Amino acid sequence: MIVREYERDEVTVHKAPLMLMGGIVLISLVLTASVRLGFFERSAIPEVARAEAGIKPVAERSLRFFDEPDGTVRVEDGDRTMVLGRFTPGQGGFIRATVRSLVHQRRIRGLGPEVPFQLTEWDDGGMTLSDPATGFRVEVSSFGPDNRAVYAGLLPRKETR
Image (cartoon, rainbow, N blue to C red; front, side):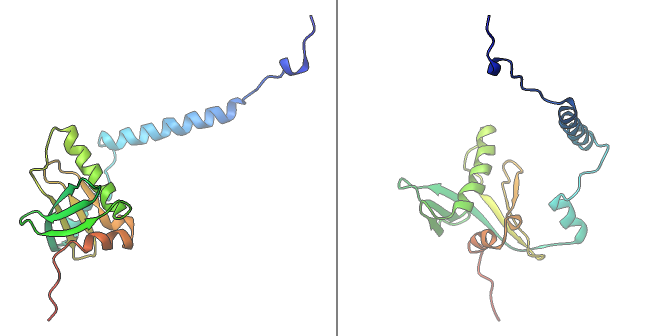
């Protein structure tokens, strides 16, 4: 029997890199479990940090989001049926993504659109889109000034004196 050279080639993986990768995965799981089980405190929980620092809201608005037949997302004031903005396909990608994630959480829980979302601007410059129905929040300011500006345009206009 003739064995060709290419049939004898073996792919060998050294044990050291595999053991290191396994160690990294194990350490990640242990650290995550430690935080979840309360051995370490969670840090940077925005609502706790704001309460400790005495940060107050400076502007708030209830928002409702609607998908129109042509793919446009219509944003209305949650208390009145005043249209605040329309984002056609190709526009408002950040609004679509953040609202989609919050709506997904509602669907998982079997909740509908009855309760409006809450947009809050804080006196430290932060901005939060929250869902009172599920308790989930998106820290809009964490995604940069351009994305924050899109949501800031939906807040009530500040009076200048």
